[in-house]
Length: 390
Figure 1 (cartoon, rainbow, N blue to C red):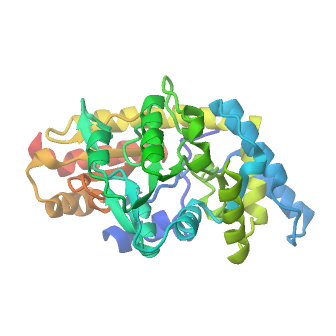
Figure 2 (spheres, rainbow, N blue to C red):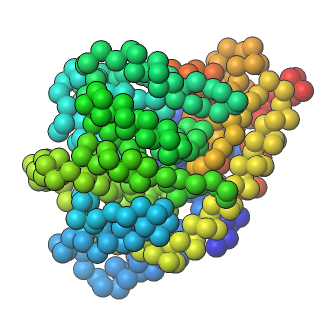
């Protein structure tokens, strides 16, 4: 796979490229979009072959379902993550955002509080508020340059209004991988306070060499009666447009309620999403991911080394994902000025850190899941935009 290939996505309906001007005021003609979390690489051959099979079949009608796909998901989790999971515990949703919203609606009531560890993926807050639930922020703390959960403070501040805990694992932004001990501590808190655990593990495959990801239920199998694990091929293989995710629910009563909610919403897996996921979770897909992760890790070193050349900018060390988290606090600038320089001078559009909740106010998130030449160009532009600090 040639990850260095430059693919022109302008004018293709890509949210990342074609909505960049609306989000950051920068034209795709000369801008570098580093905001929406999808990659600019050509799809893996196994995905292209799966799509070609659909085309050659020439029929897109009703199909038998997702059983073969679920078996592939179970194989992948066991082979890649050492997590043994029963395919019968899986249900398909129209992506993981849909899964989170449906879980909130099914197992909590309006006004219930949902714990999230901020700064965190902005859609968590969005989905909680859309369903008329209440965000309970548990701000992360920075120790030795990386995020840690302040669980003593979290537990001391619980009031009994909390019903659910929603975690990003690995964490978005910053790519922090929670340790098995940290995950078990979360499981203990959920058990003591009768909280439902929802573990969004969509970034689980994008783990750098030398790092190890542990699924929540592998770390804390005793929490199976109250846990939902959310996975998808979409982040790993850039198939978000297929709108398909998997929710694993070991508890039979919770699983029955979830499937009833899917039935009431008339939600069924789509043909393309099932075909792509089944193809992705295969030996050929595994080979492609190994190459992808090595390439992204190289982008990560290039980007953070380049950022380090700008005094006062601090990039958080990454263990996973293609989402770099950079703190501009030490510049002494207002974030309006930081964004002016990044947008107008550098012509780069990252995600605004304030959208990720408390603790993100002085940060920007940069998507480095793009050909290395484009990452290098972004670094050069940022260094120029902040040249007066050097």
